[in-house]
Length: 387
Image (cartoon, rainbow, N blue to C red; front, side):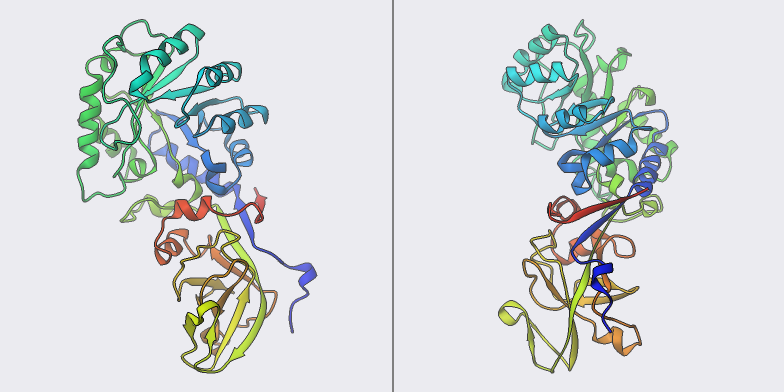
């Protein structure tokens, strides 16, 4: 008999485990114990809810990172007291005034107007960071301006930073090359100016080394006069329990999924061998089959291009996607589960990713990445928070 749907899940829901979030932040800090911790909460904390996430991390975080000015203002207006760095916002004079008003920290990156922006920040006594392009060729200064010296009296430049583009792949040496470029660009200024901090390491850069000592030795080898207490680490995706490494290791496997996306089975039906399921008949039953219809689709953020067979977890066992993803529903072949005496009924919860089913697995089946799946969960999906 179907479960009483009035007392069970009726729509797609994202359960957010804040204890898992905090555990992942502790893991990040353990890999750089003397460094400051900046947690990336842009894009609504990768789909997890920026205000809730920032509040949950507030006891242990030194700073937050966002991509837009309005994100930073929202954090301040919701009680955030920590430093907030804005990484990819193109500032105008009005924006700098807002940053000053809310005590925000812009990251300056555009070579064509860097002198003007530095002058604006210095005149306003507004703290700022400088972003250097060491090989990603997306944002960042290709060289420090000739009129600027990190050892000179630019009192409001707090940090110089860069972004690693291939730290997830140990098979390439691009990261070491980027660090060499970074060292060359800031030499000798940063190494002889203790007030200046630096920020390089993202999630993959943290997780690629098995211990904090190994990671510190790596940076010391690359940067020479490496001072751990002057570093600001910037974990992002790892905070949310997704593994950014192409080859998981013993450290990355300790990550705990924060979001568990689930939805109810709203229909079960028997179809005959040869019957097709969904739009364009994209899946054909290889035998007499039982199909569960689950109340989630691309309108909720489930990937439209997930392939047939993409795993879905039902009552602790894996079943496979059957047919094209619709806006509000997907079909799942539960024939094998039932044949193995797994009870499947209307009202049961299906896990689309999260605990028991890594989001990276679904991303591979949809030819995308975990970042896109997590940030793509739509506003109509309720976020339910647990401590």
